[in-house]
Length: 273
Image (cartoon, rainbow, N blue to C red; front, side, top):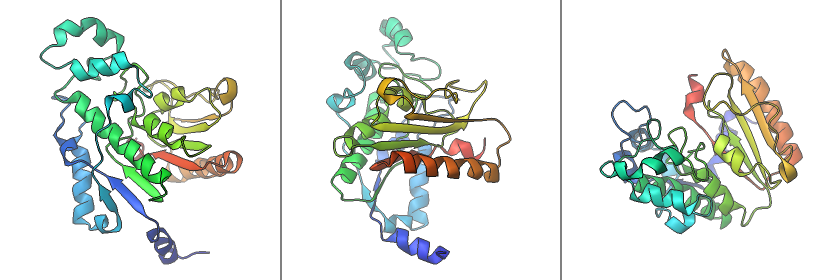
């Protein structure tokens, strides 16, 4: 049985790349909105003050280009995010309805640039892993798992996770996506619902709770049948009960799918839900 010290030493040998852009904390969804990019800056300051950054290779990623983002998203949707501003919204009434932009997903100053930073970090992280220049790559500016091909959802506009996985698929035959956010990872699951090269596995709160998807019976379709794994949970889950579900499910997933790369979305809202 390895000791805690030996485990820490083993992990310390791994090369960890960390992607961060200091501008990300400047974006503001609007007064009263619960999504606050400033929290990403606060997390970065914790890394600095605790000295954790010394164990990381810190990079500032290039913002994702329009072309990179349209590897998944529709050009029309990206063009809307690029051109819509709080000042010209009246001329985009139809598009706002079509792309589900409004109250939950407002148009704010610098929206497209925010999407570029978030997506750029995940794409850069995937490239770093593809080149075998890191064992682990982190992008806390990302994790926006609700965004669809041509639709904003749940405070998410561009799906950096899907873009990162598409990059990983250039070099890796099978990619596993694990989502421990309290909300179902619907955007990522939908993107890969019909392929057997990506397995999506989501542990989430279910039942009269956003986004309302992620039923146990949702297992994928076509070639992707049984490559979507959903673990819907009710209120009252403790650390012990969560672990008693998570460990055996993930052991079986790893054994049966044998992924070449793993993408993990660590939504911290599950820690207090």
